[in-house]
Length: 510
Ligand code: BG6
View 1: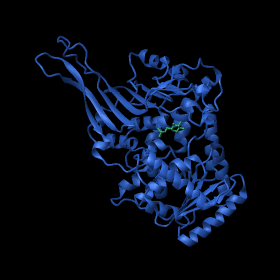
View 2: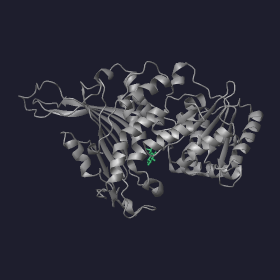
View 3: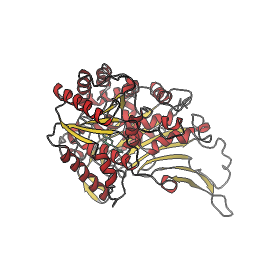
View 4: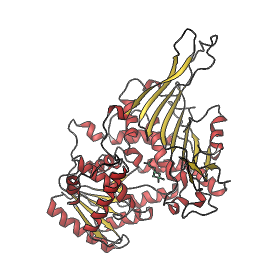
């Protein structure tokens, strides 16, 4: 759902452009960026005049690069990888349209010469294909290369927009590892680029159901009158994963669950849920309203945050090792793999409504959802009847793996005596829509082509997000934790339950 797409009745068309992928031989390119470009090719959404230039330290030619990507695509389609149905076969025509546009350039990102060669190559391809000088640079590289690569681009004159042409840079997370480094990175990036040239990707915003939160709230007259402190008791946001740290032990050791998930993905879910209605459906209005959510939030107090690390356990009947026994992880690691917290938003809509967030690895189920608990009926009309307790009213927005919306309320059980049961109205995406295979990156990359920044993060928003969690980052760095404290395959540590129980609330089961 892109703002530009909504404003005109015709679907937007991607203009001619080149896309340079730094980190072309890396995992992100292979697993997500290329499959997304392939899916865009299948749906006919790639620019008509288009060129992809892969840049990476790995010495290989374009054919070898293409073959690796093609083989991966075939095997992931067979297995039903990210955004695909098991057993799907590759659409060779769509792949050919894409691969015909692909070239490869070995290059060292620390070397000015590589950027000069790239500039020459871009000029040549632009002349050949008529790309209008438009270039999208995609930084699918480790965080330490973000700032220096942007500086190199600047020095090589590659960020200059002449006439109507555009130059845009996509930056993946993590945007810094704390407030100070996020500010430093923004400073470095914005010394070369204007803010509107920077597209900070958070792939959670590419998920259909996340974008649907805006439709649910602002395309219906039904929910918004209830969406406030008068009717809502509290909000729970859960991002539970079954996976452990996989092959990313080294990265994860210095990151942990808080940095990896909270100021970015989980906060994006929170902002979509809590933002005020924007005056218009455009990037500036929407981003301004999201930013206001963060500026209305308190800094997180260490007493309102809980951390955990998984011990060995069982998931889906299979034993899994403890975090400390994962590859590239220290046997005495104090890195958290789970975090839960309570936050408040100080504004007219939300004052006094707690937002409880939790995310963790190796939990019992994969489940991302936003659960909104409504207040009880104001008058206990049934108190003198056989009904002793009413079920709670919940609106549950399921993001993944199920995608849908569920409204839970009380209904009378049929029969002569008065008893109630909690029932539900259930909307499932699959029942209504045939969805195109998607990794979540398709919308985001397409939005970069058409220059729609609605779903991307602004520098100030990110810095405020870091500011909110910084007291806990500092506190945890200063104090060791008694880890491990939850079994793999569970719902997290007991302290996470206490965070809610002390206020008479409870987490929904994972
Ligand atoms: C990434 C994190 O940004 O998001 C991973 O670094 C996490 O640790 C992943 O597993 C979750 O994304 P998704 O789309 O699989 O829910």
